Amino acid sequence: MSRLDGFINRMVAQRDILNHVAHDLGLPAEGAVLEVGLGNGRTYSHLRELFPDRRIVTFDRAMNAHSSSAPSPEDFVAGEIDETGKLFAGSGAALVHADIGTGYPDKDAITLSWLPDMVVSMLRTGGYAVSGLPLVHAQLEEVPRLPTIREGRYFTYRKL
Figure 1 (tube, rainbow, N blue to C red):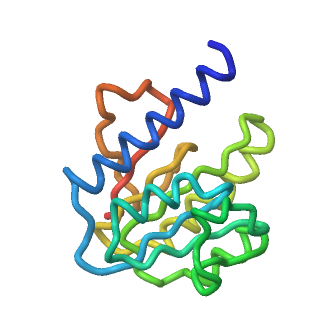
Figure 2: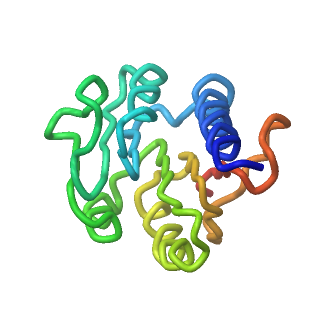
Figure 3: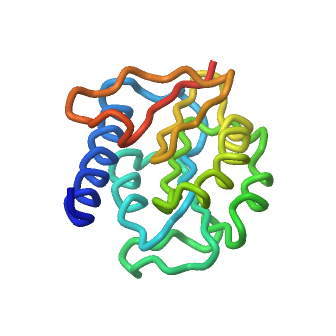
């Protein structure tokens, strides 16, 4: 598969899963949405449409989002995510979305050494995690994959 097709496949999976969480699974009544890895803001823009009544807090090294999809300054946390994410431990988020994989197994292994614990610490019981990387953790139960999503492409979990 070409890198372009891989990217398209990942974006379609991301959109389909986030729509599924919003429309079919339903979030806990309370809690923010946390976007781990703002990037250029495309997913943040989609999350604003899906969850207009929720606070959406975003994390990234620096603000690089397009002006049309940039969060307000109070909803953007700048810095290294493995450090800044700790500030939201115990925050009781309803949803944590993390798309911070690099496609390099050695780099992603480092991220996976801290990401599952961080996500669990951010979520409330019954909250959902959606990730481009597999989040193996005793407090996360994998949600069955949508038939439109290739195995191993994108992952959905519910916090026990």
